[in-house]
Image 1 (tube, rainbow, N blue to C red):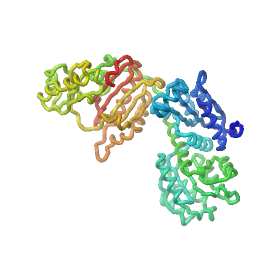
Image 2: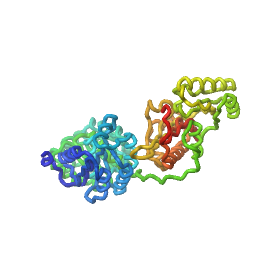
Image 3: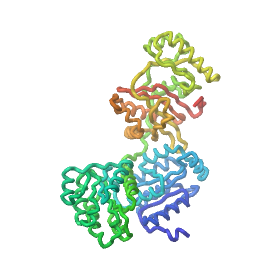
Image 4: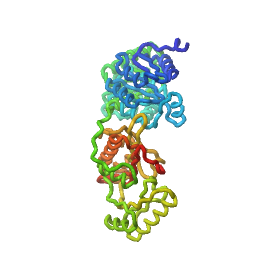
Length: 550
């Protein structure tokens, strides 16, 4: 069979996969790449053992240092969390491929395995929280596993690049930035030291030694040692063209690379060059990965550095906090906000009004201008029926708005139960965000954060995390959303109260985790202001609640 000719040798990379054919492909490609395998486990339809159990086993296996896992679906979300965290605590990188990232793929995965593929972003969140790195291809998985099996995870995102080709150096620098790594400039003192050794060397990082290095290989050690001292580097990549194919001339470079690796044992040293197996094997024996493709080398380094950060952030879910006595769940916006307020979420001073006269009294008490919103548990998305009117400046405007909102709601949703109008203050400034929760059938309660308002589904700039949230994970959840930069004073705007937002995220997540009857919470928008924030609209659905127009 194929595996008889492609069987990998012994090594430290363990493989856990649902699909047997998928696993055999990883197994074979690892053999072609010279990556040694400790254990290979295929769980099939998981009638007894699942991938989580295999990861748990590999986390304890003394012969396994790196774990590659492939999942199509998952039945036991808590079991997968425990296994991944166990591997993180054992210091074993876990590199995961989860197929089913599209609707078509998810449907196929569910059909194949009989399990739920789940919302793809939820799966991503669980992997990140538990210290595992999700990748998009077998090639990427094995490249990162190869690096992690030979060398330490980079202690910092900074990368030093030394290249005998200016163009390749720039290519690698671009790839570093795109992959989330840093390429810090060398200090003037170190650059002077490098140029004293190799006068034609150019650049500040990448360092371009030009092809002259091929005739002066004795200077390589001094240049490389100076680079490592010259910036906060976690990794150094050396593009050496084709010297790895010239066995008689390679020893000076080999000695310099080995000396660098030994003098800086916590750093990642990577050689990029075409090579013969003899040269590659000698470097690998010293903990130096060897790549032929510069971009693949950079991406593998980025994966290893990301694993280091994920491992440091991995943590089990905090205990579910106790909550104060809450009003009845469900109902319209005012009822949902009453629950949120009792749990500790700030809401504006507002009143539910069954008549136009009551609405005028509420507006006068709150202070003009006000906002009027239709109040009905059967109309969740009020803007879609014209159910919000802004900037009402006087009593006459409130009376007219009350009648118009009721008319619009009855025209758009004739069967809806209309309970009146909600009068609220007209708040200005700040950034609208969304805080939401859902109960995933595999992973349980999850909390979502993103930019809010009517465009949330258009831009889909959201991130998920498991509930309940620790304060540290609330910080990371906000950071994962691109639009969160608006909170820090974007283009001269005010700095907003991010701490109030993070506190609100923790409260909503705690509410979802503590009350299993809650199917979902939608706070959209949660307005973040310079001081504090407010839930301006909210929906809470319970497991038996009618979906309305959601």
